[in-house]
Length: 475
Image: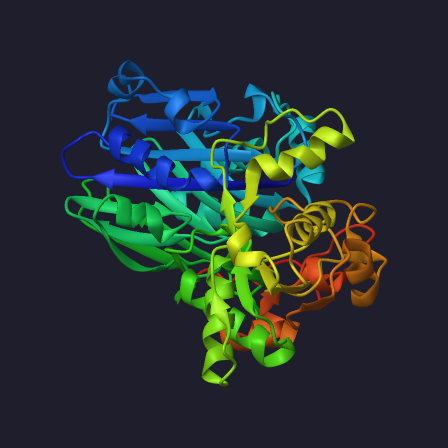
C-alpha cells in the first residue's frame, strides 16, 4: 500500500513529548490529512491515540494529557491505495514478550505481500492490509532473538522498497531510512532533547536546530534522557534513489531536504526553465501555491536577460475549498476551478501570459486554467512546467494517477499543448533537475518521469541492478 505520510519521533529530558509531537504533526500536515496519531511511553507502559481526520480534529486537550511520557512518535497519513479506514491509521502499536513497539512509516515496500504471507504462516495475525504492520511484526519477531540494533538490521535485510520509519521500543525512539534514501528523514536538536522528522519544518516549529539528514541505510537511536543519539550505518548501497518530486512538489518550501533548501531548489528550477524554454510574454504568473517559487526564479532569470517581464499574482486562491468539495457533474467540476482560483482581470486582460506550475498530471486543471485566462482577455497563454512530464505512476509513496489517467503517458508535448489549448507548452528536462539538485540521475528516483524505477516492481522496468541490500558483515 503506497502512502505519502509524515513521521516524527521525539525524546526529551524531563517533560512529556505529546505536545511537541502534536505541534510537529501540525508542521507535517501537508504530508497527510486522512489520519493522525501519537504513541508515547512513560517508562512503564505505552500510550496511544490514533484518529481519522486532521491533526486539529484528531486530538483534544484530554487526549494530549493522557499521552504521558518523555518519548514518543507521531504520524500523519494520506493513503494513495489500500484501505482508507482506522485499521491502517498509524502509529501502529504492538505488545509482545520483549516489550512494546510503536511504528510510523512513510513510503512503500515492494515485497510486503511476500513477508506477510511468511509471517502469517508462522502464526502472526494481521489486522490491516498495510505494509506498516508487516514491518512491525517482522521487527517484533527479530527482537525476540536479537538486541535492538541487530533486530533492526535483520528487518532491513528483509524489507525492500521505500521507507522512513520512526519507532518506539518501550521508551527508546529510533529512526530508520531505507538504503536508497528515497523518502526524507532528518535529525534535529531541541532545547531539552532530540527529534526525528520527515522534514526540518517540524524542527523549526519547536525552535530546534537541524543537525543533519539521516543517511540512507542508517539507524538513529535517541537517548532516553534526551541527551543525544547514537547512529549505526546498517546497510550500504552503491546508489541512492532520492525522490526528486519531494523538491518539486511534496515538501514544504521552508524545509531542508538532503542538504537543499526546498524553496531555493524550486527557484533554481524556475531559472533553468527560463534558460531551456523561456518565451517572451508581458506577464509571468504562478499557479498558486505550487508554482510560486518556480515563477519567481523564471521571472528573475528572464529580467537578467533583459526581458522586461512582469512577475504578478494573476490568480487568487480560495483556501477554504478543499479536496473534499463535492463535484458530481462536469459543469460543477468546471465551476470548482472558479471557486478555487479567481483571475485578476487587470493583470491578464490584453496581455500575453506565461503561467507556471510544478506539474501537469491529468491535464484537467490546466485545460480549465488556460480557458479561464483566455475568457478574461489574455491574448495568449503559454504554459511552463518546473518538472519533466509525468509519464508513469509512483509506487514509492507519492500520489500519481494511473498510466491511463496521465496525460503525458501517451501524448507528445505538442499534443498536450493542443489538449489544454495552450499557445505553447514546455517542461523542464531531467538533466536540469539533476543539475539543480547537484545529484547524478543515477542517484535520483525519476521513475514517474522516465518509467524506469530504482526498485524491482512487477511489470515495470528498472534503471539499475536491483537485489537485496548490501548488509555489512557483523564485526
